[in-house]
Image (cartoon, rainbow over all chains, first blue to last red; front, side):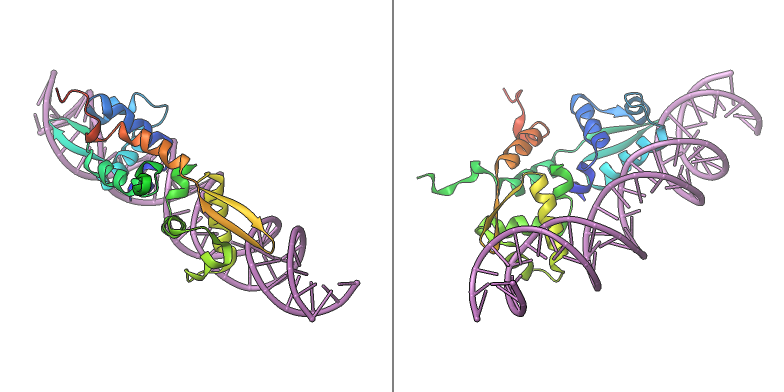
Length: 89
Length: 89
DNA sequence: TTTTTATTTAGATGGTTGTCTAATTGTTTA
DNA sequence: TAAACAATTAGACAACCATCTAAATAAAAA
C-alpha cells in the first residue's frame, strides 16, 4: 500500500508540501494544475497508506503528515542498504 | 522508476532473494509460481530502476543487487522520518 | 431555511501493468 | 552444424490507475 502510494509524482509532491505544515485539501489543490477531485483521490490513497492523516475542522479538512509508516519503510530499506553492513568489523 | 519497481510484491521478493547472493534468472524463477517470461519482465524492470545488475556468464545471466539506488531512496525518505528532527535541541 | 463554500463520491475513459503463450536470440554440447 | 538449454522479446488480454465532469454530502453564512 505504501509503495503504491509513493509510486506517483503528484502524491510525492503532496508529501513534500505537508512536510512544511498541515494544509487543507483546497490549499493543497492550489499547488497543482489538476482538478480538486483528482487531488482528493490522491489524498485518499495517501490516507489509506497511512502516510497522511485527515481531520475535519469545520468547513475544511486538514491534512497532515504521519511519519510512522515512513519509519517502517526505512527499516525495510535499510536491509538492502550499504549502510547496513554488519561485517565492517 | 525506483518507486514503480518496488510497487510489486514479486519484485520485492526478488530483491530479498538477491540479498542473500547473486542468482541466475532461472534460479530466481524457481522460487516463484510464475512463468519464466514473467520473471524476466520483472528482472528487466528492476534492472531499469538500477536496483539489480545483470551479467552474462556463458549460457546463464547472473543477477545481483545494486544498493546505490537504495541509498538514494533512503536519503529521500529520511526527510520525512521522525529520525530526522533537527529541532530536538 | 436557502445559498454558498469545501470537499468527496460516482461514473466514464484512455493509458499502464502483470501475466500468459509463442517465437526469437544467444550459448554450449554432441 | 544441428540439437539442446537459458533467457528474452513480441503480442494479446484482463485488471488496475490517473484523470476528468457531474452529482452528492457537509458545514457555514446569509
